[in-house]
Length: 272
Image: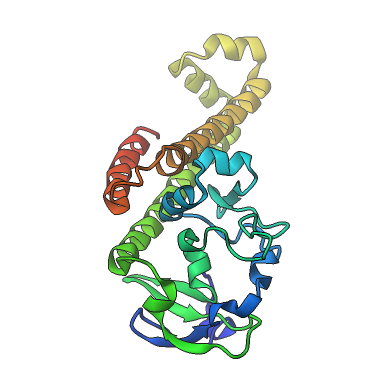
């Protein structure tokens, strides 16, 4: 996801559709693998479609990709998501510096040096400038460059996944904000009001034992701890349903994703 007020800062200023011609064709990269050998941090974020194909191409489960240090989990925009481990370059490069899972490579790798710019209706493609070191790229149609089978369904999936991640971030944020607001309220109310509050929730004995000040501090800490556990529960559900539970490679991915999306939303509704 790109977050720039002016796309001219990082692109040629144009918006592209899948039917447009764009100058990105590296003609097989001609032996260059600089982008795959670079330390790109956690920028190669993996979505469920990527994992569906990568586990098939690598012959490893998602857990096996993690323990093989090919994929890592990291906090990305306040939620945990998987990404290719890139601190020493991509582990999927073979001895000849070529991608060992090229047919099954992630969407971000397929896009490069294109990017997606999201809007209210979906997204447009942009050409990121200064990213690819090759300066003699040929023009190619965007959909051909991507090489994604059934691109319309994939684009629909990308939009669903983007909206879902926004929902997940919002839910995590709301859990933390509610706890913080409650902690601030407990921190500021009078001793009399706090005594009444403790009585209502059955904490009178605890209040008498600890005293007003200690009870106030520990109650605020408990709210924040519960919020952390709640936000972790949200992220664990998302990781389990969309990544850790194995996909059936003999069946349609998009149908499986829609089923998992319904299941995930149902489970998340139980977390306040």
